[in-house]
Length: 63
Image (cartoon, rainbow, N blue to C red):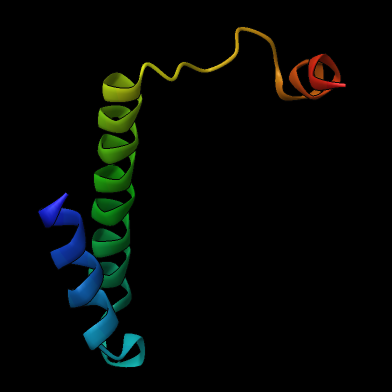
């Protein structure tokens, strides 16, 4: 979680207009994967699992 916080702070401190597009894309991709790992950790620790049905079926199941 600390790595994610550091990555967000690092991106927030930079002016995206000054960063080469390739480097910006790499940073955003790394941030995406860190967020995905964090979500997986939270899901494992809380026992939360994706519904087995799709989003539309899941929404109807809640009605």
